[in-house]
Amino acid sequence: MGVLSEGIHSGLDLVSAAISFFSVREAAKPADADHPFGHGKIETLSSLIESLLLVFAAALIFFEGVDHLLHPQSVRYPILAVAVMVVSIGLSYFVYLHNSRVAGQTESTALHVNALHFLSDVISSVAVILGLVLLRLTDWLWLDSLIAFSVAIYIVYVSLIQVRGAVLELTDTKLPENEVQQIWALLSGFRAPSLDIHDLRTRKSGATRHIDFHLVVCGQMTVEDSHSVCDQMEAKLSGIFYETSVNIHVEPCEKEKIQCHVSCPILSKRPS
Image 1: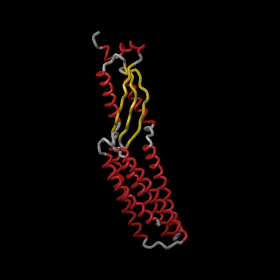
Image 2: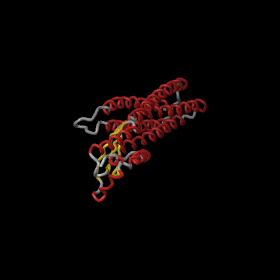
Image 3: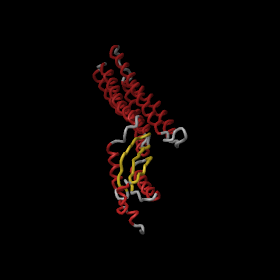
Image 4: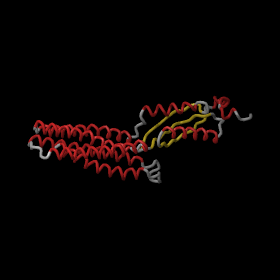
């Protein structure tokens, strides 16, 4: 049952990898008339489908485990089973390392989930091998179902974490708090040319982080000068994240604060 559960798990991993292959290609396409914000959500949707496939796999494994518990059978060829699992561990770990490295470089949600699929393969395969060894030593047939249940529970745990992440991204939840703090820390360095920054909004679509906010500048600042400040902000934000789309709404200061341009380093350098 343990080997069967891993077979089901690995088979669905193949389906997951195929989904990732096509979704990453589609998500990488540039924005067009129908998708002005890009195709990043295709990748997020892919990670949700992949995670739900894992839940389906866990359900199959669980019900097979129940059936085997009610109708126990002796395990045949345990040495061959262990050998197959050892090969599976080696291959799965290699694929996990490769997917994890590329996911880290590109911040691809689909590849990250795919990497976790193969890591869960490795962990559950080790558990299955230990179970097979114990089964060979003790001949306790109920251990086989216990292994299957353990693998199913672990797969559900991993998949639900990924489902939650995908749902949060699809519903445009803000970026993690540590990333939002990074953004505020960077923007605070522009307090001299800017007077105020408010209405910060963040979200993520695939590998792209979308950031927009309102920037208050001196009312005497030219369009060219304010645009230059925005360019600097965009460049800084793009430097701390892999792929970023920044939208800045520029506002003039209130009329009663028209003397604020005296403290503006861009304007104060101009001859009066």
